[in-house]
Length: 80
Image (cartoon, rainbow, N blue to C red; front, side, top):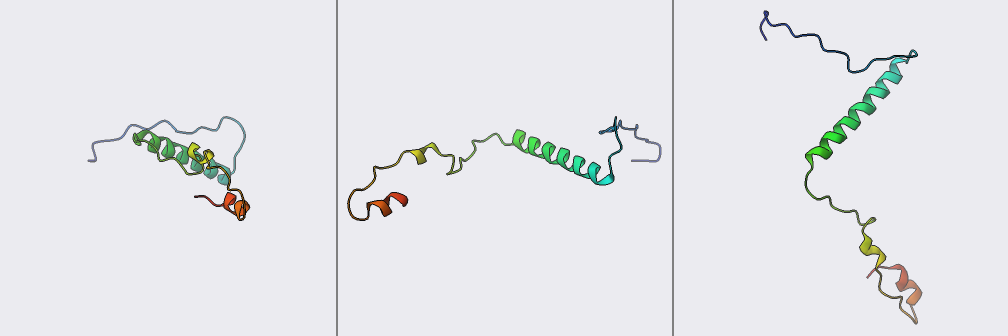
């Protein structure tokens, strides 16, 4: 940018309309807003299918029947 070019002033991104927040409160607010904005930008950029967590996988609900006989109780707690 040369000395002749002057940027137009930007309007404030955040304006306090009531109360007097402390510096720590403002830092916390700006941090949350920045994190949410970054997460939204990441979600918008990610167009591919998401990998499902094993905990949320509906296939976990489909189980083989419990084994009967010796060791059946122990076998019911272990997958496979």
